[in-house]
Length: 221
Image (tube, rainbow, N blue to C red; front, top):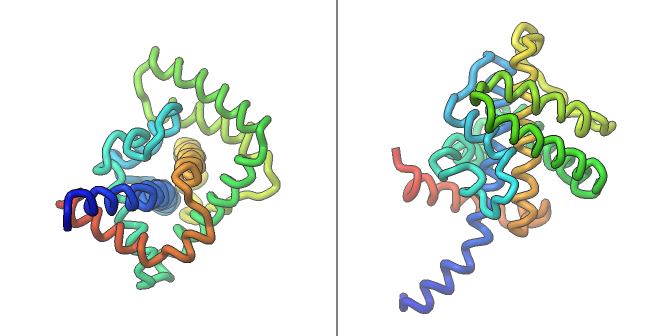
């Protein structure tokens, strides 16, 4: 392939790559929500990167929001598994959370007042975050309160299932709301990259192939 044709092909794949990474970010948050709801634990690096993405206000790409593609490994693997069609029963909660997140993203996208309030509250929290230690529980509690004052006002709620003991833990509940907000944020990155539900249906195989390529060439472990 000539350099010109290769460059054209690369440019053509940029939107698909960004859409795939944004979907992986949504899936990563959903997987973490599922893990915390069932066990009270989640992968620390993935949790930190996902929560930090909430404050990446000026990010125009998923890599900028998450720091590096390695921080999305859990999500890329999760998206690959969801699109593979294998063992769907084991991942039904993750899929349900993802669909709920996309629904809430759409509602927020069409609600300018709530979007403005959400952004202002998060910017205020970001200033506090710079002045204090980056304690995950303290930060999650702050973001969770913002989620409850904004997203939770909608009639639609994502029903989280798991261990009653873990779900009743206040820190777990706060982390779950924070991760859901991060997933909704990723929905905006997905939309910004040209993602839509009908494209997800039509490009399912291409996105699946992209996840395998990312894992083989950029997230090799």
